[in-house]
Amino acid sequence: MSAFWGVMARLLVVSLLALSLPAKASMMSAQETMSVHQTSERTQVMQFLAREDVAKHIAAQGVDIALVQQRVAAMSDDEINQLSDKIDQLPAAGNAVLGAVVFVFVLLLVTDILGLTKVFPFTRSVR
Image (cartoon, rainbow, N blue to C red; front, side, top):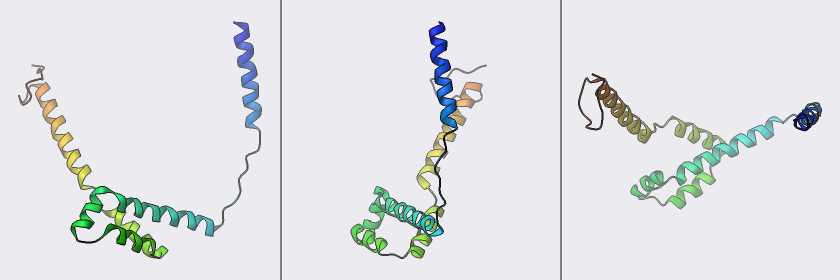
């Protein structure tokens, strides 16, 4: 058992010494920060266009998805910024419907278990 504690003590000493090593960090310029932000927003818009439901909706309007992606790639950073903000404000209807269905199911399940209703045959009421 003392060998175990000896190994643990050595590991603890090494880990504490490693904490004192300096970390290398540098300041980022505003230009570097903006380019990273713009790249992430452009990627977000392209991922939105690559979604299957969005592609189906665009195709239903009679527009080629490849043409849309080319035009988005040619947009300025300000236009991408506006488009990204609009995408963020869109409601996620699929998630809302699924959430409502799960809520109703759990509500009916709890009322069945409490004996207030008898909707599901697989539940046993508390009463």
